[in-house]
Image 1: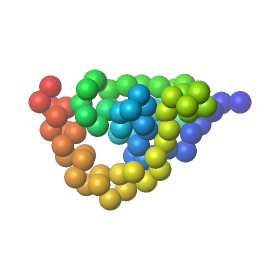
Image 2: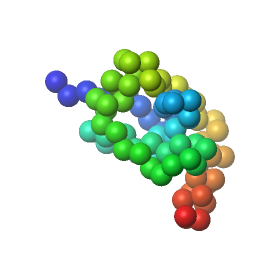
Image 3: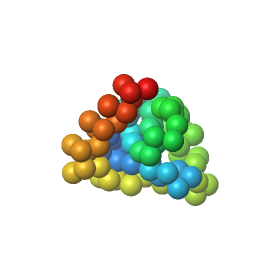
Amino acid sequence: MAVRLRVSKSDAVIAGGTVHVVSAVSDSTLELRPLDGSSELLCFSHADVKRMIDESKASVEYGYFSNAMLLVEPWLAARSSAG
């Protein structure tokens, strides 16, 4: 049975002590971008993220960006285009 996490762009994935913005969610993958800009876009399968959660290497903070996303998204767009 395929793993599919219920994650949206208003949630954050915390891994390695870094807050990651959920940039995109598809049926098979999650695209994550570190909020601190420490690396490029990361792509993981839902199963990989679930495994990291099960191993206590990551967690999902539901609603983390529900109010702050209006401030964060323009910053990420500007940072991405600055390259």
